[in-house]
Length: 492
Image (cartoon, rainbow, N blue to C red; front, side, top):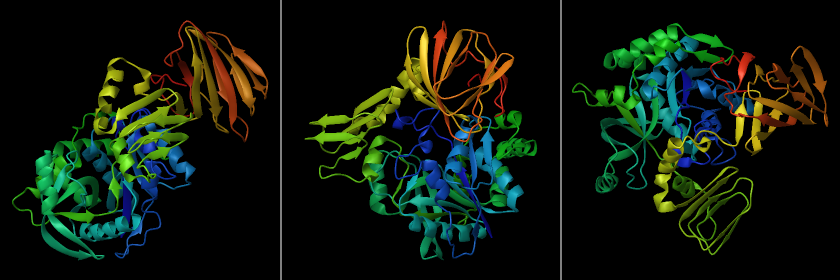
C-alpha cells in the first residue's frame, strides 16, 4: 500500500503581518521550532511506521507558480526528496489543487492513498498525528473519504466544525466516526454548545483518501472541476522537479474547496452510510491564524510573556514580542503583541489582533510595498536586501548563490555600481565578460545589456548602488534567464 503525502502550499496568512506577506507567506516562516511551517509539514510523516503496513512516499507539493523556487529551496535545505512540485497557474482553492495532485500521484505510483495536509499548520504531538493517520489510512483503504476532526479546546468561532455520527470502529487504538454534518463558523453561544456536547470537532482541513476515490467523487459532484483538471493534467509539462498543469485549462477551472465540492455534499446525501469519516485528532494542533495563536502554543516566562529575539520586558505580562534585528524594550505592557521587522513594526492589543487584516487592507489600498514583500527579497539565484533609498538612488546588499546567475537584462532609467564584498563575480557588460574580485568594483551604464553570475564555490556578496530617475523593479528588460522566468515577470 502506497501512501502519498500531498502538501497544499497556498494561503497568505495576512493576520500574521508584518512577518507573513504576499510574496513570503507564513508557511515559509520559522514561527514554531527550528523548521519553517512547510518544512515541518514535509517532515511530519518522514520515517513513520504504520501498523497498516503502508509505505510513505516522498511528498508531492502543490503551490503557486510565484513561490516555486522558494518551495524548492526549503526542501533543498533539509535535503528532502520530493515527488514533484505541482505549480498552479492561478489560485482555484483546494478542490482543484487536490484533483490535479490526485492525477499526478496516480501517474507516479498507481493508485496511492493521499494524505492531504495544509503547509501552514503546527502539530506538536507528532506521535498522536501518526496514530490518527494510521486509522485514517485503514478507512481510506476501504474506500472512505476521511477528514481529521481537531479535538476542540475552546469555543472557537473562527473555525468550521464537524459533527460526528455513528462509531465506525477502532483502528490503531483510535476511534473513528461517520460524519453527521459539516457546520459553518458558529456564533460564540453556539460554539459553547458544541464544545459542551463533545460531539463536535474543529475542521482542520486534513484529508486522507485514495486517489481514484477522490477523482470519482469530484467527477460525480463537480464534473466541471473534474473536466478542467483532467485537461490541465493531460496537457501538463515537466521542468526538472516542477510539474506545470496547462494554464488555459486550469484557469478555466471553477474555484471551490474540498469540503464544499465533495465532503459536505457526500455527508449530507441520503444514501450516505459512513462514506465520509472523521478521525479525532488531539495533537496540540494550531493553524497559527493570528499572533495570539503563536502566544498560546509557545513557552512563556514567569509573567506569561512569549519573548522571541532580543527582547527586554519590564513590568509586562501576557504579551507576545517578536524581534528580528533590533533590541526591543517593553515597559508596563499587558496583553499586547509587538512584532518588529526591518521595515515595519506592529503594536496591537492582543484582544483585537484579528484586525491586523484591516491594516493589510489599508496597505493594499495605498499600494504600499510593505503589504507584498519584505525589505529582504528572495530570488531563485539568492536574495537582496534594500539597505537605503532616496529620490534618485537605492542601495542593495546582494547575495548570489554558488553557480547561480541573474538574468541577462537592461534598464531604461537607471545605472548601477557593483562593489564585491566577498566571493568572485563574473560580469557581462555589453559585449565584454570579465571577473570582479573582492574589494573591486564595476559600473553598468544606463541602457547597457548586462548579467551577474557567481562562478565560484562560495556565495557572492556585493553592494549595488543604483542611480537614476526611476528605480522600480519593473524597469527590467529581460533577454535570457536560466530559471525560465518569462519576460512579463520583469524582476531580477
